[in-house]
Image (cartoon, rainbow, N blue to C red):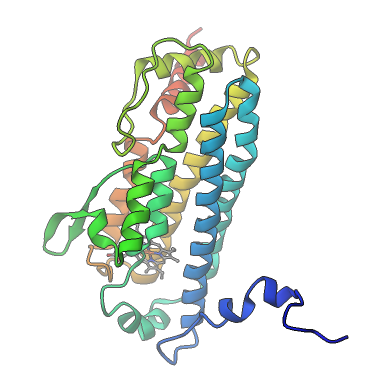
Length: 293
Ligand code: HEM
């Protein structure tokens, strides 16, 4: 059989020549490939997670009846599974010892290159609902504020970040959807680029959904899917933190931060100020109710 240029093959469809030639090591270390593959595979999964979140957000924004949110379930489960897979993948990187990493770290991080500059990671955060324009960075010279847009390297990256910041997050779409299911007093958000603020009306709606879960089981499931999502995102941050502690200890990061201290603050921040505050508050309320005789 002759394979002409138009013939579709496994390798051509997946563009494996491009994909598999994109792992260019900068040193002679035999451990650098692991580092590159770990980051690249993260970026690929980030890409899919962002896509799935966009689809789920769109489905909820267009949905009218309770059943319409079923369309979003599969997407949200997929994102949680991607997060879990990424968390599990840290186990591969933890086989890298500090002395092995040292052999290529200074070279690959020489111009301040760091995961801190991952545009897709910021977009993922924004799509999940963690909106901000600047972040506090603990550096060896003290704490300073860094604008997210200043971290971008090209106009295209800037445009992608700005679009994700201005777009409704999955929680914005959820709250919007719940409001259309007849829960009173939920006001529409005007500025999607601002961090979501907790509301009594949204809390009351979720509380009713959870207390009468047999009445609107779809909404109850939707709440649980979002908790799964935020839980997995929190765990990713802690898994990253644990690996960094194991591989570089308290050494400052190549991105200019104090390293562990910055990542610890970022991980704890999600526990102190959840993305979907009313859903966590409902859990607190359930616990108190369960304890009351
Ligand atoms: C040995 C492996 C790794 C080490 C030692 C490490 C270290 C660090 C450090 C110290 C920071 C803080 C910023 C800085 O000063 O550089 C950081 C941020 C970050 N890293 Fe890693 N990292 C590793 C692997 C990864 C991998 C595989 C990814 C996957 C994409 C990743 C994604 C990120 C992201 C997204 C941030 C920004 C987090 C935020 O701002 O909340 N890192 N990393």
